[in-house]
Length: 245
Image (cartoon, rainbow, N blue to C red):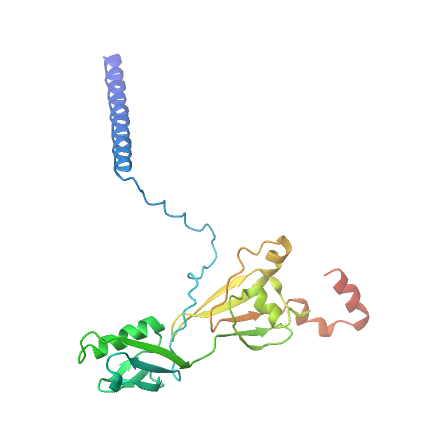
């Protein structure tokens, strides 16, 4: 009787294994047939980053309209609506002829063009317009903390974090290379922050994780631990201490 129960249990297990094998084969065949029916399959999505630290979004170099910017608005077929030096007001609105106030702050030039086209689409049939920025906020970054020349710098082209530190005169003797902070504004109320170990990148010679700066970014280099109490160390002992630091 006991042997019969063992035999029945064995057969049940084997049946479950066989069903699983059949299901896996069926799924494999269906996947192969789907792949063969598509002569141009899409490439596999890249694996997510394994880094555990905070990650910034992909770099976007398009300029976004700010208050105080001005632009020229031209209509190819309706020049009577042309405007020069249209100013973005502190609240982010512009006043357009025959249309009124339109919110444009934070938009790129293509987005601004589409916004204005939709606004005039209420009174014109498919208006053909062009917009040229005339006066705008020049891209910049801010370097603060333990760099030789803290301040605000023009952001010309692609500049990485380590390049920005070099532009600001490099690290001082009091800087903590391993905990450089990069602040980036997300919206009007929030800023994101990333801590970057520049010391490790430079020591390994691998600048793959050296991030590109966005307009308005601020980097901050904190003080190292030694700088916080070196004023209390006798002068005779400072040189000996720093040689082993």
